[in-house]
Length: 154
Image (cartoon, rainbow, N blue to C red; front, top):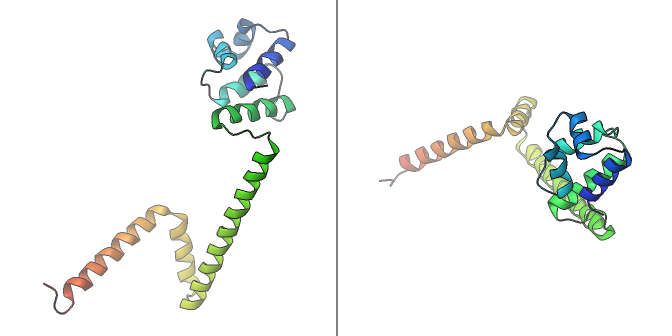
């Protein structure tokens, strides 16, 4: 089953027509038709229609529609056990490399004997990517100045 079929089944089980649901939701009937025909629709729109049908965001029905919608736009069969296992494996690999990066950072910080203020400054810079770009430009200017003032530079 795909999300369009499930959505239609849920709408019909509430005894609602396209027009009836559209009127409840305060939207055009074509919005409901677009959902059921699989035309591109934001999930926010689907969630609002589900809410108008009486399914809150934590209901099993809304979660099922959300999962099927995500499968349809991503092309990944998320209900397939192998797909889920692959996703868990990729997450584990990411966490492993994230831990390796954190360990490398800790070694570098300890190796440079940074003080608390220097560590706080680094943390601030990492938390603000625009700062990294400014620092990188300053580093390039300093290196360029060094190269130009080195003996034998033209």
